[in-house]
Structures are given as C-alpha cells and as structure tokens.
Image (cartoon, rainbow, N blue to C red; front, side, top):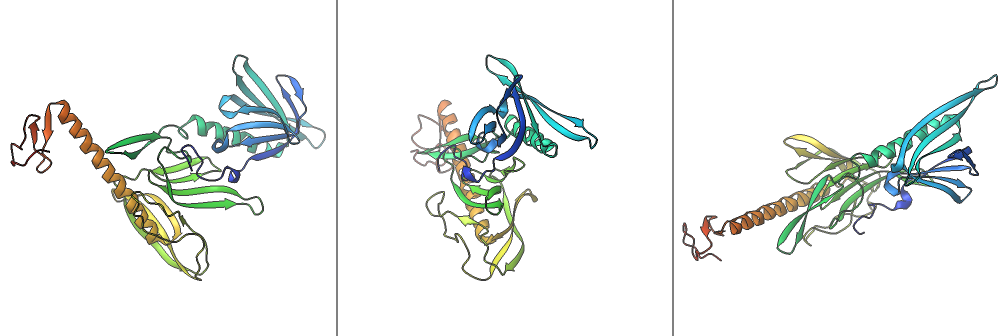
Length: 325
C-alpha cells in the first residue's frame, strides 16, 4: 500500500443502486433508469445511468441542496416521489436534477446523499492528526486526515479487523486498524470514525474467555516500527478453542477506545504498547532536537552528560567538566 491508498480494497465498499422512473436535468428529460451513489470513501459522487452506460455524473461535494416531494394520485393515493437536487456547475451557475423513484426509497436516498455530503464537508478528510516520521537524525510531524481511512505518508497497517456484511456480494461495514500513526475504527455505512493518536495511553484487558470456534478475529501483517516486531498469529486459528477478550485504551484512567472480543488480546495489547512507546520515544527525540536547535540559535550548546547549557565557545562543560562533543 502507498500514501493515499484506501486501507481496504475499494471493491469491498458498497455502491448503492436504485431504479429510476424518470429523470430530468435542467428541465430536459434524460433517458436513464439507474441512480448510483458512490460513498465518500470511493469517490463521493452520484451517477445516472442507462443500463451499464453512464449518462450523468456529479460530485456530491458540489451539491447545493436536496428536497423531496410526493404527489398523491388515484383512489389509493399512491405516491410519486421526486428528489430535487441542486448542483453547482463551474461557469454555469446552479443546475437542477429532478428524479422520480420508489416512494419507499426516497428517504433512504436523501439521507445517504446528505451523510456523504456532511462527511466530506465536515472533519472526515480534514487534517486532524500528526504522525511522527523519522527521517535520518530528525523527526518530522506528518499532518494528515486522521478521520479518513486512507494511508498518510510513512503510515503502515500493523493490525486490522474487518466486519463484512452480505452473503454473496460482501461489502465492508466497519474496519479497525492499528498503524504506526493511529488507532482507529471506521464505519463505512455511517461514514464516521473514532481515532486515537498513540501518545500517553495505557492498556487494559477485560472480559476474557475461551471461544470454541475458529474465527478470524484479527490479522497481524508481520511488520514492525523498528524491524524487531514480535511474531503472532495470522489468518484462521488452527485450534478448536481460542482466547478472546476486550482490549481497552485508557487516558488518565478513562476508557477512550475499545477493541471488543479480539482473539489473542494479549498479543494486541503488546502491539499497542510497542506503537505507543515508539511514538513517545520519537516525540522525545523531536523535542530534544528542537531544544538543541534553540540553544544553537541562542549561541549555546547543551552538555550531553548533565544537560547544562554552555556557551558555544566552551570545549568542556562549565558544570561537570565533561568534554562537549
């Protein structure tokens, strides 16, 4: 995987499809019979199609409004539901897409479009977290959209668990990941996330029990932060019983994130501690480098043995007498 890649296969993200009765764009009838909604994770757009041919496509981010209307007809008062969507077109002003769909689907379609609009126009993709990336002797903060399930520069997935829905055509419902930058839960249906940055956290294991079935609860991909990552299980359990439990992240003795009922909870806990300790060590190195740069700018140098600040002309520490390197 590379920077900007989705953390799972895009083929697992569900594209919603609805039958259309009629469509008009800017007052002109359009020959189409399908409406497709590509969620924020894979394009965030709506498409109007005729069989397999795309007729119209619009970015959900460009929508200016959405309204629903229902016309009651006949003795049974059966409704014709219309969805009126305002669209901002560059150099053309605002256009209107008017579609007629099954009345029972109108709210579902409207809510899904609004959810994807809110996800991208609110904090879903905004820069919301800083990972620490070691480059030679320096440690650089990498700002990225921590609430987004896309990889940042230098980020690697160390553990993951995916919840899939469906039987034949499976699609992702939720994804839990531990990376070298963050601990996260992504809901691909509600388009929301819970993210914790690995600084100052403790871990607790709770609700442990033995499980009699061989269920794949987690997958360690076998990489490490510093090349010394301990090995653990991958794929399906080969035994008829396994230990499962909750792994809880604590901040100031308050739970902030929980991995519920994972297999090998002690292995997950050890991995979390490796990630937390590695990030805290990088942060300490970064702060030390900043202090060194500040003392140099002030015409000073710090003794590596006792920490005393000396003039740059000093060859030995004025406090402990050690040679300044």
